[in-house]
Length: 161
Image (cartoon, rainbow, N blue to C red; front, side):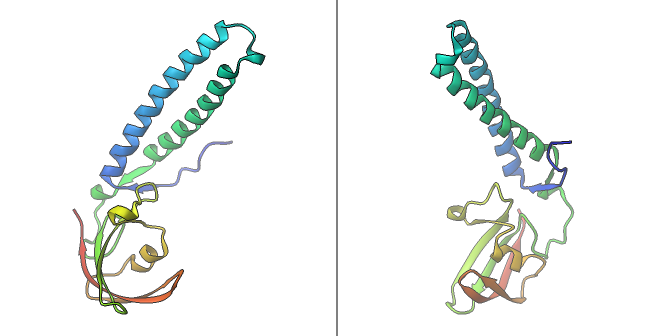
């Protein structure tokens, strides 16, 4: 059998474009490695050719990553294209919450696992915080169990761009 299970991957349009660019980069690397391997082969005894062994190993990693990216792109559902209840928190939503304990307002964008970047305020939809917010609406209060303990949040705003 082999291969990847054909489960759906939810991704933002930005994430889709980034994956396409990454795929293009890996395909370019694949061509360069094929050339490198061909040149190493022409140098004779492959058992003692470290360049050949290293190139073959890199080629295997590149081919594996190409397969992973292609599988994601083939099963990708772009969240901006889905019809969703625009008030309910889903992947792709920017959510502004009030931390009841600290009184701080914090904004997060719920992103696909590959797109998560906490430094940009993008949290993985599979993170405990995102899981606790999913399906809620602005005005609701939620109690979420996080690794550091339970926290109470009030959802102030849900936006989609």
